[in-house]
Image 1 (cartoon, rainbow, N blue to C red):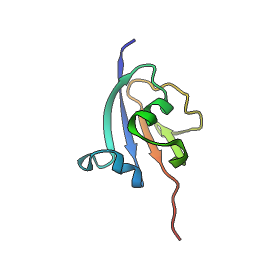
Image 2: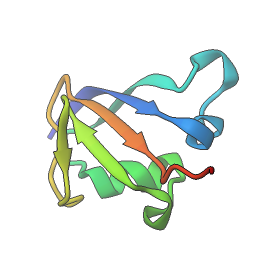
Image 3: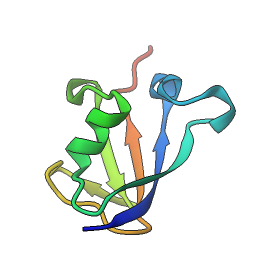
Image 4: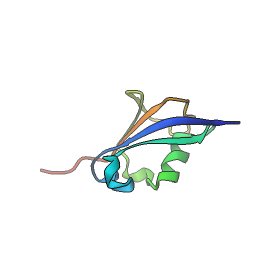
Length: 82
């Protein structure tokens, strides 16, 4: 098993989990068998804080799906306001 490169994009208050200069976008080298759920754990995202997860522009409901080299993962929290 090797490593793969993925890009993670965090939106709204989730951006605070990454360094400010990243502007919510970071490329990561991860194990090739890593799932969406495992990656969220590594970054420090709690699943109940998530509303939408997309890989390469496609919404994902199964967080046990394995990531592939070059995947772009976008994570959105629930939107509040009024």
